[in-house]
Length: 143
Image: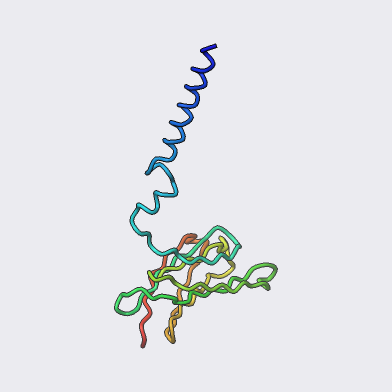
């Protein structure tokens, strides 16, 4: 009758060891981000839901500083005779970055993005059928 007591003791010892190992520092995924370096601010994203293409924007002022909350705007036309449209707008983060996803892969006309901060506005054009994942570095300067 001594065998079941030894087996039970061994089971309890192994279970306790597994519990302690699971609780040891550095092993928990929840603790890993707290120990890593600070991350860059999240990039604001707006999704048009019409395809797999995207456009990334970095917006700066005339002195090269990132512009916070510069507005990136585009109108997506689609459907029969392009009668339907979706109006999209996203503001940049503190690094001057924003992303537009879900752009159509084969638009009938190139897409025109207007980028505005205060009273300064500029336009960039992209044809996703030629450049599906476009990247734009935009500088807004007052004239």
